[in-house]
Image (cartoon, rainbow, N blue to C red; front, top):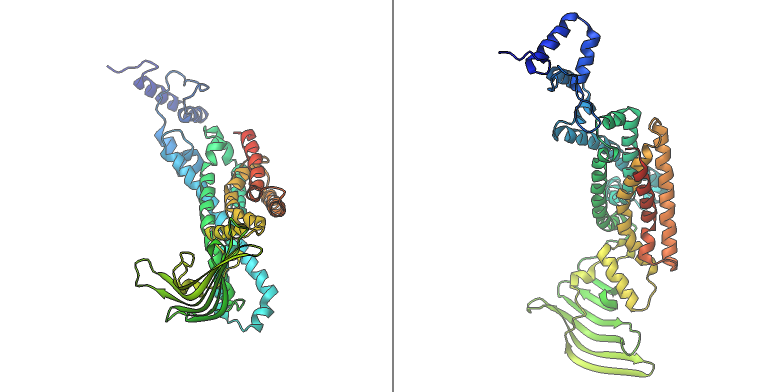
Length: 441
């Protein structure tokens, strides 16, 4: 026997059939809206008696056919539509991010060529070398551009959601603003990882670019004469000749500057040094020389030797033939060892410590800027692209100005060098947290 009660399934079908028979299209549209409304949560109302709880599958298919991606993505039925929304936002973010990441370096290249074209022509730089030099210039340029690219991508993506009422539609379906921008924050963190990798790669590519443009001579890989090499641990080598084939040095002087009797100055002089690869440990063997310990004014101890092996001379012949690096050509770990060596010799290292800390603070500015820019973009949801450009340019100017001030403050000793490099991130991070908590969700 069929259940014809108003609350039963058959009764609901009969109820709908009777309504369809009246030909009232306005009532049918009202019923479809009730069928599509998500009946869940404390604030939702139960459907009228006689209307089935199952959604009208045909109406949902019509919505999908109209291409309303946000309506389908924000529906509360399952996890897959939410992932669709994440992919949609990530794709929109990636478009702006790639455009900014490649567009800004291209602008820098054009300006650089316009300023230095005469210099490149005077050095007889070929077109191929010039093209390769800009390829090697990419890591250094992109490293500085990535925080700006992340800011543009976040502001324009979130701003477009507000202008097209997609943000309102997502909120109406139960998706909060914090949940909506989560894929953008994940993408911004991926930019942090990429920026860290490019920061380590930039010193190598910049050195190669200088060689292609004739700013640095390519050193011979077979021999080297009359040079000074700064090693780890504060050691400095003065070498008259080094031959890579015979693996020997002539007239070697090694010196480590000290600070007093507890850490004395050591000078090692040898007529010849031979690099032995047959031994188990390998290394250099010094012949016919002397070791001097300078403990202070008028206090000196000297030992002569025929053969000496020291652990302080760890570099191989290939390492000694390498080009001496400036601090801006060193990676993070190399710069740290160089700073420690200078500190042991009593040199001022505050400026270099700030530069080393910036190798971490600048990449992490990507996620800080994203946290700051996302809620700022919805402060005026109906604003056009001009507002987004103005916000990005103003934020970029303030951020760069603060990084330059932090470098000066850290190098001057007003703040600890490592802390000074992170001050801009702390300020923008605090402002971003405040905007995040006060954003309309």
